[in-house]
Image (cartoon, rainbow, N blue to C red; front, side, top):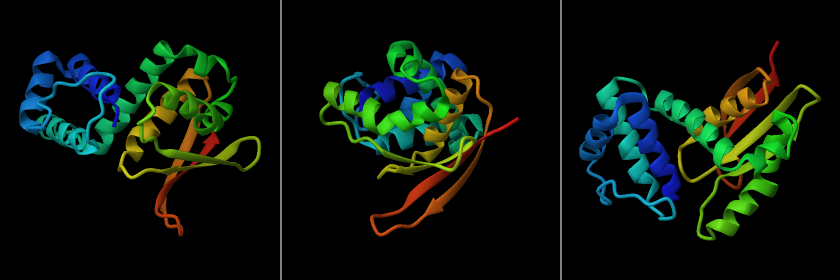
Length: 181
């Protein structure tokens, strides 16, 4: 997992719970890196799981809820640091459709060793899509938070239903997303 996700997570913790909490979470998680992350480094996703679990214990907030909040934060940061990805699309569904075919291609140019999740989009009419999320890392709550933040970015209210699915290629999570009134 790329270090930028770790550095943004620690910034999120410091911004929402204070810099001491970020230090405490690193100490509690006892991660092999010692919490010394660089944006361009690569770290095991298990370190992120340990950091989130430590924050969940300290705050009493379930880990999936924290990942969702962090996903919103991360999407907001990406909108600031990579505005061209957002400006290239005019709607949430078009943006989500561009993730694998454009955004992840550009990410691989910057970070050739990045192991990115796969997003497959199936349109179910003008107001609904299924977005399949396949990853070896159980971070679907992070992905959902990012989707919700992207919807806010495009000012398009949505409703999301989530289902775990099985396929011959392996399990995945399906986000059924529709425009909400």
